[in-house]
Image (cartoon, rainbow, N blue to C red; front, side):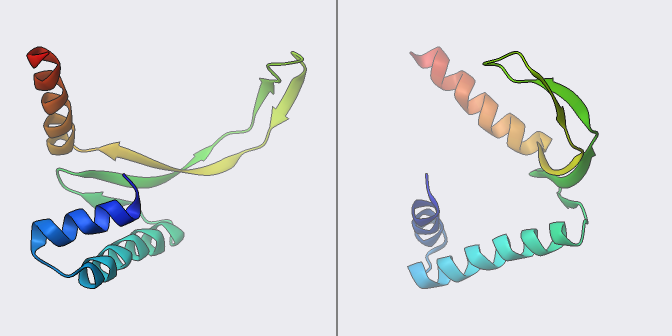
Length: 100
């Protein structure tokens, strides 16, 4: 599913126009981006948590040549799904597999 499909899904589910759903989606995505830019974690109870973590520098290997190389420290955005989202998605998947 891409952004266009997602916006149409929201528009249908919430009885909105596509323009209203687009504005709402853009606003939510901008809010998430702004919070992460400020290095704040963003926690939606039941849905999940967006966070920025610092990854340490480490040694790695080029898989083709086997040559050892240095991977510098970096910041990374992470998302950890909440219990409600996890249960909803994974239980749906389990039920679909059982039906087959």
